[in-house]
Image 1: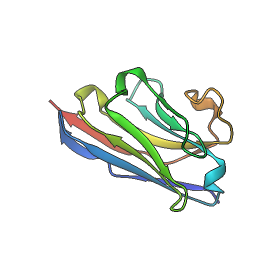
Image 2: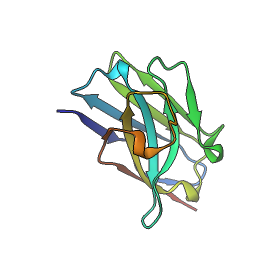
Image 3: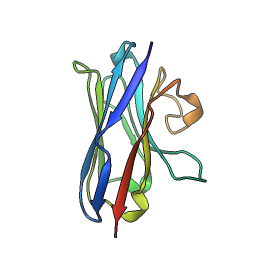
Length: 124
């Protein structure tokens, strides 16, 4: 049974930082593209970042470039999202997801497995 478990969310002031983690089990982690998405109630799920199986390639949403960094540790079956210079508009539920191909990595419909999400709230 595949499980993706996010952690690290919380409440932070604007300009602050958070590090999200997503621990994977039940799959060969190194064979999966990993993505981070976020969703605000009533809006579509939005791709924030993605990282290839080896970690050599990454994708970022334009609005988070230079502030967020995605990384992975295949030995620990974990993907991370370091979020710096947080803004109130970053407030959302953040999800990690796994996909088997590095294709259209910002399309949530391509991802097979999803975590339960972790809330990130940035106060102004």
